[in-house]
Length: 328
Image 1: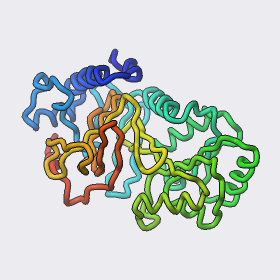
Image 2: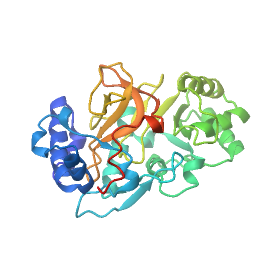
Image 3: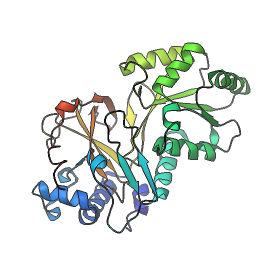
Image 4: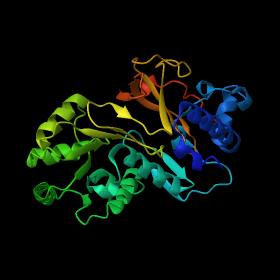
């Protein structure tokens, strides 16, 4: 599709709207699952002339269907960890180059080039299974960093601690990305005072520890690492782009990704800025799957486009999913 290349040059609202409508028309014609979902809603794609009228595909379809455009074959399949149910999500990625461009440019936009950092990863639950899009991203960013000090850690906390101390002494620009529970496990045994370190949490507790409110989690991590702010990465198996927070749980997305907040009871009604609701995501990098996704996260958005994640819908609260188990 010829719009693939321009999504990363989206700068203005007009660029974004134009790209959204082009991607929508392409996917409404070529992504069979999305096409059928649109028909079940009683819509015809030609009726959709504004971005706010584009329907969002409920994310559980990635568990039950093959969400990929016709004529495309997956180069790679990313799978979710499946902690929230028996069926993991499967993202069939037809062009892994799109993913690589998206996460490389997205990271660079917020942090500068990966090669400027020593990148350390503490992602045990992700490394211990196949198909993690996060591991794929961090492996590639670590390779781009091209610094021999970069690398992955599992449960070898003593080694990680010694390594962080050496990097602090050398004055190396260091980023530690870790799954929340593993970062907590680490600082319980090896508290540090490394104010220059960028600590980026992602992925939650994965059933390994009691869930904590984000503010509490960040407070404990700030104290344990001796840093002023905790950064966060917001991504998911079903997306090819990430949003980043440099502190206080406020996320910013790259120009080719936006979120919209929907009413918690009626998924087709938007809510005003500052109101908590369901998170819908437009990710134009999802060129050959579906770029318009109704997630099961709760959040709120602010006037400048930044957003917060406030938790997840309880299973019983989900609406609009009664179509999922029919013959779509």
